[in-house]
Image (tube, rainbow, N blue to C red; front, top):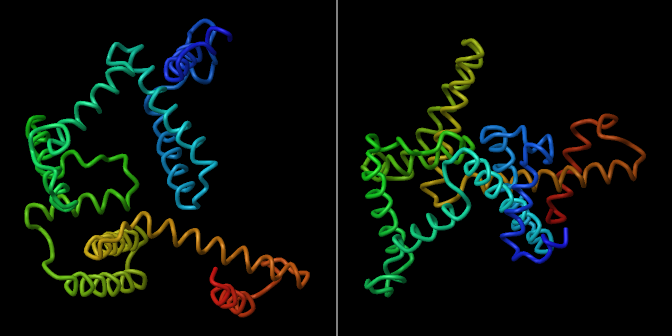
Length: 266
């Protein structure tokens, strides 16, 4: 362990990962993993980073970022073992991408641009990169592994770039009303798979509304989840003062406590 302690931090982490994956002396669990089995952990760690930021839990953020960094090191180690690439290649690739996508910082272009202009330039560069990869369709490289709500927003953004978009927000809200009616009709008359399909259509249009409002739907739902958790915890605490558990209460009582939580600003 002394030799590990003397290494620079990133080299130390890389060496630890290699030791964990060593077929002879490593950890059996780490050795058994592959890209597919680790991917869910990578997504989970990214969400834990977002959660720490949302809670402004700065003491936790360092650890969560470390967990996310470890996921990159894990994937890079497996890629290195397969002869695909290594951690240095990963770092080089992202460094080159950042230089290419920021000519106003690293090149000859003026940096006297608004944030919106820079976003537009970024999209032009990404479009050129997609063309160089011979991606045929507009939606081809929107990652399948994204959370469904996030992917819906990205699909809609990509389609909007080529003009496939409602020109005004009122048309989106009209579509939401239409999809809600279709869902209600499906609930009463159609089998479950059709109900699920109509539910998906409604959620997809809700994501579109968020995009038109310039609201991140994933973040908005995450915040709504947090608010629900806070308010329900308030209900549980107030019921406990009355010697009750939620299952011993009823909707009328819990709804009154929910409204009390709202008044408390929770």
